Image 1 (cartoon, helix red, strand yellow):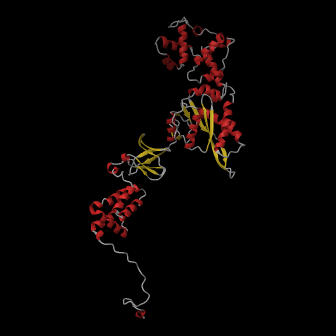
Image 2 (cartoon, rainbow, N blue to C red):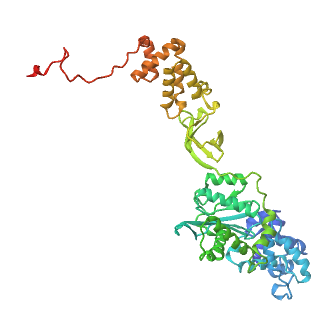
Image 3 (tube, rainbow, N blue to C red):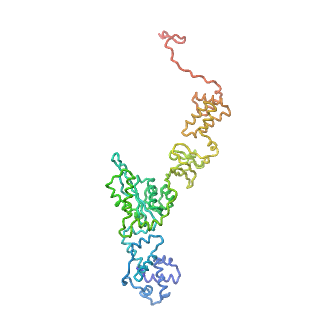
Length: 517
């Protein structure tokens, strides 16, 4: 009988529900608050016994228990053999292995000197309770990867000045089932370094776990919450690429990431402590030394479990990991933008078009090294090649119909047309293009100017532009007014150069000094 003994009244209640009301095992367990396993054991023992329901009126508690569980108490049995509980514990980390299977194998090896299944489970739980508190969590093979930064940093020294250039951050990743550990140094804990460390960790393990458990670092979690934390968009992008679930540890719940805490502690003691007397001038040099010591750590035998981190990883986690994706992960930056009235959004110094229907709406922008993708309500609305210079990138499909007609024009084509109409028309057109921050913004004015040729001809238009240059009236409305008034037909008056007055009084219109005496 299980050590979790129940009262005679509750045992009778279980039997009554089963054999009188025909309730299921799970229904009985919920009603009586007894585990499903124990309810099942009691029912099966009653079915094997010579008793029948209802029980005889003279059936005492001792008689019922002795009839249902005839085997002697554990204390009176001699020569029972304990299995290797460390091996049992490691075997339970495999997805397909259960305590029932391990108990059956144990019985086959121990024959008559084996514990019953209930005692097998009880003694395993006793052994587990004597181990470190961090072992109380059961992690399936290939299921979880715990990630965090160490509290300690390593200084990287400038070789020219001898001063500390920066303090390198130490990223740590630990597999839940095997404790196989990865560590590396990065310049910072910013998003790009954080995600890059994940990519290199996956490559180190040679596969992808089902779940990644980070701390509530700002680079990973934009809003920490016990129940519904919000992932940083760039971190979610990585999770989507690798098809891995990210489940951040709850704030102020260190047990949620106990593996990471222990892994960080081991890295600090077995790696960083040894580096405290060494000097590093580059990050690559530091990481090379970390890899050497990391290999030693993973090959170090466990104290209370069989094998090493490396051997356990090869047995448990490695076969259960999913393969790495064929396409390499590409880091992306995410930002919010509001669509301007010219149906363009600003991203890293360049303007990209979106469908004109989205004017004044807020969109999400994803910028990688090669592309800029714009999302609205989770859907892709525009995708452009990434530009690293100032200017506009516009797709004709994004324009209103009245604007798309201008897409075929370029500054070169406008200037070539203007050159054919005359030098002054060419000068004014060049001025209009140069007067705006972006040439596209002057297309409408240039087309309006050049199209005046239809009504007035090329010669009059060129003359009007010459008059406009003289009076510095470079706007389209100034040139149109000149044409409408006919001033372009008047010859241009040559500019009169001012000369100094003569110093002598020989001219008839100049009074002499005597006039003022």
